[in-house]
Image 1 (cartoon, helix red, strand yellow):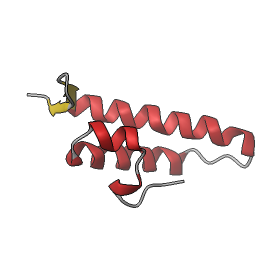
Image 2 (cartoon, one colour):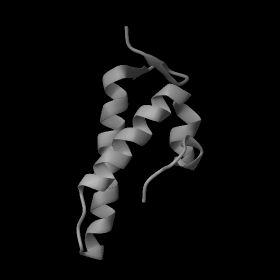
Image 3 (cartoon, helix red, strand yellow):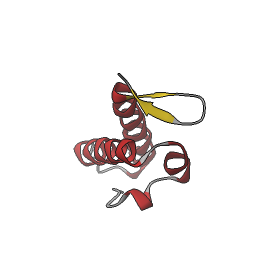
Length: 74
């Protein structure tokens, strides 16, 4: 499960992040997803949760919430 375009991201991500932050999210998610391969299906949910956590952490490094959305850190 990777995201080829920002339009494929979860609605919660698209709704609150500006497009450049969505790019960061998508890239971090995809990188983590592809790096955490497990042959067992029961690990798929853990893999997805980890990928979302890493993606949000990547966004937080460069953006911060401003009440109505997210803005770049200065």
